[in-house]
Amino acid sequence: VQLQASGGGLVQAGGSLRLSCAASGRSISTYIMAWFRQAPGKQRELVTSFNWSAGSTYYADSVKERFTVSRDNVKNTVYLQMSSLKPEDTAVYYCAARSIGRSSYDIWGQGTQVTVSS
Image (cartoon, rainbow, N blue to C red):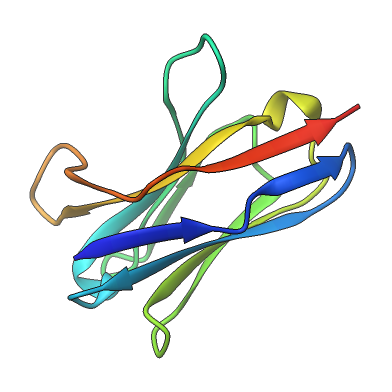
């Protein structure tokens, strides 16, 4: 599968953005999907991961109640709806995938920049 992320941009604090991760090659339902982010000078961090087969979703504490992940099976696309954005959400956001049973994410899309101004 190949992943293509989009939807980043510049937004004021308190605003919203929706990121998209379009997958090609295989259905996203066969993978565990995730969104990561990396801010300047910081390590890449896991924002959310989701295993729809198992019905499980994880959100980092820093984004709970503000970010929501969803998918469109027809479009084979994953979305990250981000609301109540804060300057500390500024980062490059990456979508990633791993096969069920693998311990690490081995498929990555290119990043999309999200900048939140105060």
